[in-house]
Length: 232
Image (cartoon, rainbow, N blue to C red; front, side, top):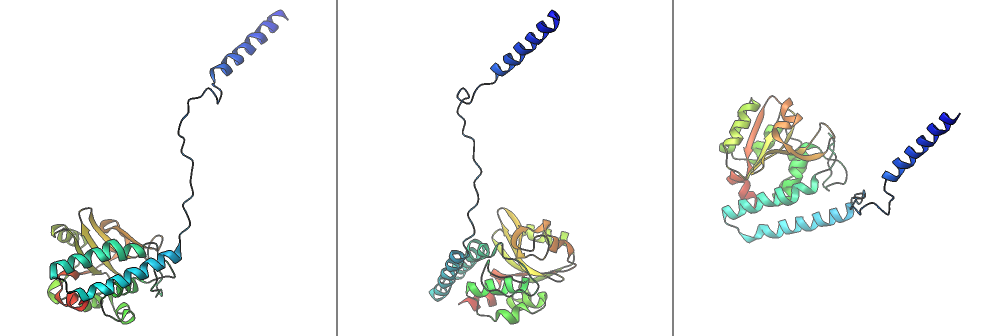
């Protein structure tokens, strides 16, 4: 009995000893523990209003009579830095025809025709969007600025050899979108029918749509005289 009491007492002392090793909240040093914060809800109305203001600026810029190089730079940055990002996150649908980013759904051809129209290119977005992808490229680009590839590898090599800040429209077997080359790499910007089915910018060599295509009709938008003249 005495042995059991001694063992019990030692066990209690060991528990007390362990508790004493754990500091109380008051004893713990102050640390900046980040608290999770919820992302604010997307403000569709403000998004649409800002996009309308952007379209008005595009319309006003057309009347300025910019030199060719300045015009190319303006159109490049207007699309890549302003117009395209407004559309990111807009759902894709085969029958989507919305002309308002993040409101409704849009098909790949309508994404191309609507963004170019909003840049200031006079076109019928319905007629252009409903054409076959190769015909869209032919409608927008000079013949000398159009190349056809039947190998993704050859397409990648061709784009890697080109200067930076290039913007192209590409027609696939059953899809169409934009190709961007800048200092960060080569990207495919399109209303994506694969994955989450959203309008996005993704690396060209990681795109499911690119990987599934058997043909690539590539048109150099900003080097096409006809395209540049349509903006004036």
